[in-house]
Image 1 (spheres, one colour):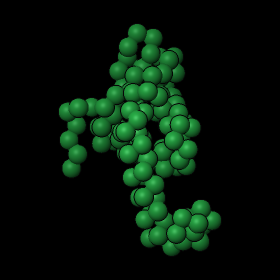
Image 2 (cartoon, rainbow, N blue to C red):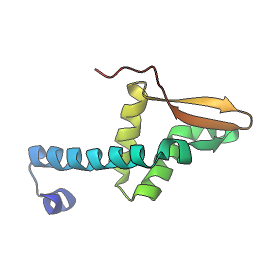
Image 3 (spheres, helix red, strand yellow):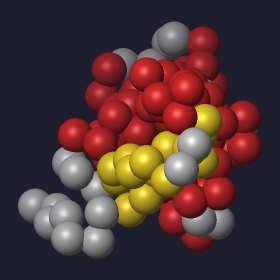
Length: 102
């Protein structure tokens, strides 16, 4: 199925299965290596691009496809799981400890 995912020959259902497996592995890596905290410190001057910068850094660090990383980061943000705060001349991404996941 992974080969079909990469070369575009899978059914949509199989692609969703493969993407789900990748996302699970990505989330595990992000959590187990504290990557939000490690890669989420960005110059305040770049705050407009903070989401893109975080996704690019995670992509480079984890070697996952950009589409899956970007979708995962967007999901974290949309669910309120990660947020940013200003810390001097930097913007820091952090886990929202009060977020509830349904």
